[in-house]
Image 1 (cartoon, rainbow over the protein chains, first blue to last red):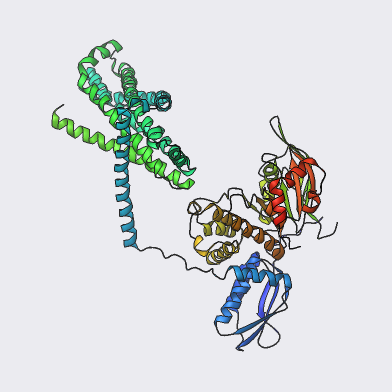
Image 2: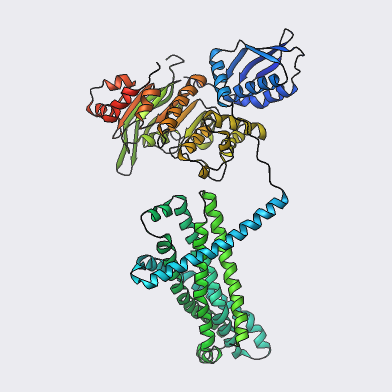
Length: 379
Length: 261
């Protein structure tokens, strides 16, 4: 059997004046691939002046819905200009197709939506941001209510998802957070070493590395890594569950999504992030120690001796104390953005991006607020 | 082989296995030009898998599938492109692109494969959407804003966007209310009559079988039990075929069937 070819470029369709006055002639294959060409013909068509027109379509050899639509549209356009048309010679099967298209599209042709103006866009954007902020606040409120209920009735706390989240957000983050803070410790010690060497204050490398890591950098960097790792995962998980209507299914079987999905994540992260921070305090300082010995000749023993003087317990607690706040921000923002997903795959991607950006932004902002508060309190 | 009876799809001695599980065993069937062929069978008997193999989404272990006379098993994507333009596929759950509106879903296919100007493509997309019985205001909506039945119609509009010669439908009426399902039967028949389409569908819908299908193939545990018109199959002696068509639902559908032929 030979396959009929698909001669995209060879498709020839004709529309033009016929032999008799007041006659239009259609010919050839009125199919989709000829439509662009035919549309140009329609535009260039010189319509005879006669009021009564005859359209001779006896030479039409093929027709599909696109061709039928074009013919129907042309006929309608001519009729609206006051001509009366008679279509003749069209094969019965093509006529049936034309009638099918005509009957189904009687209601079609809605006007395209008008793009909103600049002011309307600005207003809409502002309104969206406002709704988003209110939404976040009410989400935090709902989570707090769910938390209060769990505290009042501890049997409601779901330990399995908490343990699972501890594993995935905490334990599995050990290698990456450890390595990055170790490298950060090396970088800080290396940068500091040159300055300190110049003034002969080598031993103060311990204060530099210890204080900056323990009090500021290690909680911050750990929170940022976890926001990228786990915050995004929370949004994608809850968002996909929203798309597949699993959230609605949870509600119908009487399980609050806050209780099952949000609280375990917040609680698990509030436990995991401070622990991770203690761990990254150690790896970060270790990085600094290695560099201090290589660059400044400060031995490990000397470094550790000096460390207990350089870093006070308060500094350490301030660093670790910020971690639960960061954890709450990351988990709540991640879950909230997950619940904001609407219907489409694209929406999951967009909300995940928003979740990470917003979580990191809020983490750094709250870190700055902490610094201001501590300087007022003189800690 | 007459030109009108020429087979559009020919499946020969097809074998498919997923690991140890046998999906198809020596399946052979052919779909003729201009007919509505339905593949029926219990859930999980390999109907949809066969459909996926025909449209090059899955590869059988052995055997041959010819579409428009061309062997498709092992065909490269590049060589398959001309074929892909000649068939339209409607997936069971619609598979509309969720980030595009209905009009954009249909128009995207048109703009990709033709030289239509954007306004004309949008206009033809609107025609296709109207052809499937969707109201005009469905065009600017996103798939997530549509009901299940409307999503099906939109998926059908995308499948017929390029005016294909062959239409493959996976469960075209599943999840539709009886009225919409009847609309789909009629539409399928009208499209076949008006455009001379060849249609292959996978379905459970006995009403659709009685009303629209010219020939039906029954697939059971990876084998073809019988192929024929509904009348022929309903007289079949095979116990499983009888069970399928003469269960309580089968009898009701036959009783109500409106057969225009």
